[in-house]
Length: 315
Image (cartoon, rainbow, N blue to C red; front, side, top):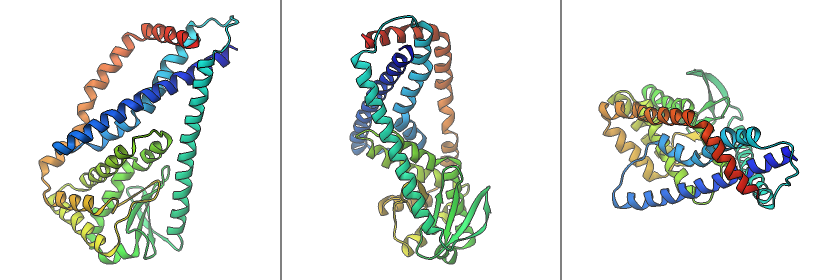
């Protein structure tokens, strides 16, 4: 009974935290969208990703780092207390949520694997770029695409190889390798695993910003920017702009409007903007350190508070 009660309480805390934080994130993003219509501005891809997975991260930390330890340390094992109706219902809801997320992730991965298998039909390995294998695919396939999560591969169509100059192809390849270094396909899989209504527009915003971040990582000089812009223009004229299916990152991802914005941004490339973008993650270090210190200093008290809350939940 002790184990069953602990499992029910843990699942109940997870689903309550996940639902609450998800609703807060969806509400905040709706306000951001409203404000951006009045005053257009950009949100970094990393910030959008953290915002999107914040419910999953928060619920996991609260459950594994606080709820489970507080229950094991402070809950008496020798008790006849039964599992209440509330934690049972919430635990069932959590299992449904996790099952739905797992089903979505597996389905997306299966669909992607099926499409990629078709693209790889008659493909041949033409080398390795940055430890990532590169395959040449037949005409009619997407020009450049990064596929795979654990073992990423870059697919380059014969069309892309025929129409791109060596510098343009190199810049395009760097763009796809940037997606691999940033684990963008894994991030897409996490989105599938953590469903919640109202998150679609946030995911779309991340998709667009992830392309801009990959552009930034692929460009170190104005000449690189021109090469990548030229590649985008050439390929968009030869191949229809399309959304990469499931778990894949394509060079021509997004709408014509977002592609035009990327080209204009590359033409206006400046070294100062690039440096600031690459070092932006440093601003996240101080708050993370402060949060870690505070959590360490108040961990014992936090366990007691969480146990009191779970006791109320059980009743």
